[in-house]
Image (cartoon, rainbow, N blue to C red; front, side, top):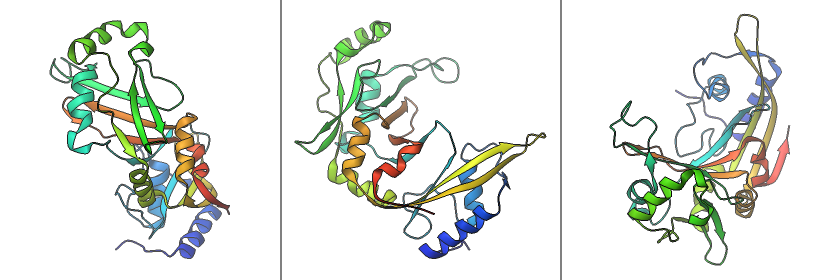
Length: 262
């Protein structure tokens, strides 16, 4: 049986863990070991389900000073009936996978893009905040494609032409708010310092405990526009790894109206 906490009990347990100081990492080989170690100490399951753990609170944990991104949630674009990524973006705008003919069939294609609302990617894609229609949209401009992708652009022209995406993949504001509300309505955000001893054993110290509540949709939209929240596509012919909304790790508190640090 996993441990079940109330909000107060969880906060008390986090303070207790913080008071322990340096704690050995028991999850070697796992890129999320700083969070997994904390989950082990809390006696809760890995946070990999589309529902919050720790009762109605999401738990997010990051290494202090890391440049990595937090995955907020996975969410495929609308119109979802079209299965836009595997049916349009990959076959029409994809390129040869670097492992084609080596690890995968020679016909294996890839569509990997990490997009924000600040700049166009080198292949001409960008996130647009359409406040009139209340949608987050993906836009394509052939004029923004860098010269190094000239051959790819010619292939795109042959497959589908060089006009704007039609229809454009999008996420409605209300859908985003509902999705984020499921995962991010209330969050305990934990920041941990990491070090290794002379034998290479890693230790964590869970220094910072921040309680975030009242998720704010407008702040999420601004985060996209100002370039610290990204929409990440990661698909190949054999598998769509899912479309992720990913945030610079130190910007999570900016998505909430109420911030309380302990």
